[in-house]
Amino acid sequence: SWTTTSIVDEQVEAIRERVGGKRAICGLSGGVDSAVAAALVNKAIGSQLTCVYVDHGLMRKGETEQVEKDFVAATGAQLRIVDASERFLDALAGVSDPEQKRKIIGREFIRVFEQAQAELVAEADEAGEDVAFLVQGTLYPDVVESGGGTGTANIKSHHNVGGLPEDIEFELIEPLRKLFKDEVRMVGQEVGLPDNIVQRQPFPGPGLGIRIVGEVTRERLDILREADAIAREELTAAGLDRDIWQCPVVLLADVRSVGVQGDGRTYGHPIVLRPVSSEDAMTADWSRLPYDVLARISTRITNEVSEVNRVTLDITSKPPGTIEWE
Ligand code: XMP
Image 1 (cartoon, rainbow, N blue to C red):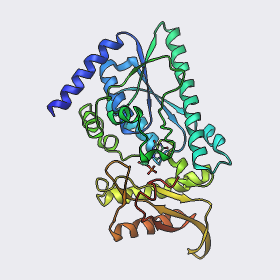
Image 2: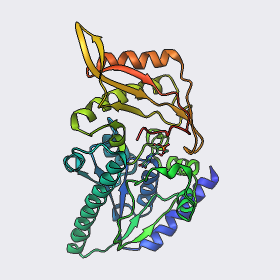
Image 3: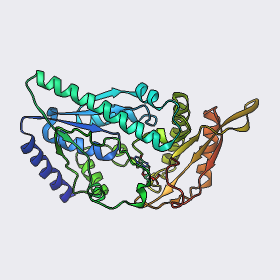
């Protein structure tokens, strides 16, 4: 629309002027906000921007590739991917407590990002250039939220991956600071990002790390990733993506139940489907998904993921249940 075009033009102009000949860094989380902020800044300063994506190994199937291929194809932005999955798994070994997991993931994320940042600064230095700016996908509601008040949704510590390292030495560029989510999506579209990035449903920063009830291991992540991919595929095929707010798929890794699969008795894990509808994630209701869609998801998961022998549906509203299980 006309307003979106003018927001983009204004920002591009302002960013160019502010950055001048210096360089900027932007952390990509795989989410909408950081992708749109990065695309906008890239439109303004192109190769003076380097995007950094920390792969913590807790993403869903295909998500890192989406950043690697789709984002880069759409924007032409310079991207550095840091594969840190080993490090995150090591740090999470033996940990089952949800808050502990969040703290560890948040801490490791900041360390890895700072290290990448330091490397970029050193390289620029050598080339006689100056990295002076850090791009953040802060939205208007984030600005308001951090200005005071503890919403009911903040009972859990939300260590947003992509958060600010503490000893910040950069000036911030926050091109989405005055925008709401729907406006950010329009800006994203305007700067050429594909629908699978712009229309992405909310997904927690700590990723699948807080969707495995119990310790996070590589094997468990692989099981959950397969089950989650099937659920997402079927929901998309049924045209339900816009009707639901999000649908966490949760692995109850410490629970086993008896089943019969193939030629024998199994002792596998349950998967929980948690489809919800919501306006702002502060409150939510469980989505009344069509039975045939649920049946397809259940059949496919138990057929295709051998470690899972039961699929259950969470029919709790928020409150009292939160959207995520951890
Ligand atoms: P809950 O589970 O509190 O979730 O009802 C509300 C919304 O927040 C998301 N969520 C998180 N997002 N880091 C995030 O960036 C987190 O640690 C986190 N925990 C929950 C959740 O997916 C839902 O959209």
